[in-house]
Image (cartoon, rainbow, N blue to C red):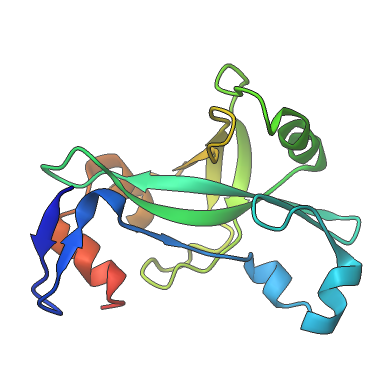
Length: 163
């Protein structure tokens, strides 16, 4: 456990397990709650189809933390093509690391990063039971830069506190 005293709240936080996750894609949240059961299919924690035309998978977008072994991570939904969605569903319980990566777009607005919604990403399937790894394609976007170069512990704490 890597405990770090927080300069914002004064508490100690375990840096090794820090992540922020989105339970739903923004597209799903736009559907009135009473209609979601009729319009959405999937296990709704790892993959989701909306109507017959939009497909989403939940992934893990790691961001290295400078001078730490464990990354910070965003748990994001990504929109993918129908073919890639069904490949993921078929391989859901398999080791997908040898499967070629495929494109997608972030399906959550990450408030800490401007214009993250619809940001192009590359998705690499992982071991069975692990979420796919999401990598930002545009290394000049602030989220892409952070994923490439890492962030400080202080930045992680600020993200966790919404600062």
